[in-house]
Length: 169
Image 1 (cartoon, rainbow, N blue to C red):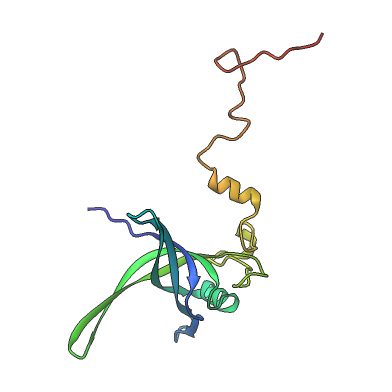
Image 2: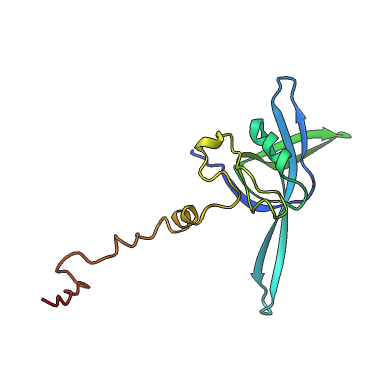
């Protein structure tokens, strides 16, 4: 049976990042984020729910996150879920956390979180727009990727929707 394990979250850091190094020299960053969701309650009032997620980043992505992000910083993380299990005082315990494979800092340098590069393990030269928020052209390409571009929607022949232009000569 096939399986799929992918998660994408955008939220704010609830604490400063804890950066440590494994004996192999690999950087490990651990932090948590709060993800807010607004919904309409049965009485018609808007209610805000908050969910908290533990995130772990590795390698250069961990170092970049630790350098540029702090408590309150907005971040987008893409990764996979991992369940940790351990035993404490004779009781089995478990916790599900997110292993971040890519991250994007949200906001500019003047906002909380400092902005800066994206991380995600790709060199800065190969990252589209290594600044904070996506450039307007990148944002529209991403958000509107399923809609036809303006030149695709222009009528080109005698079919429906084609209006022959009034030529003054």
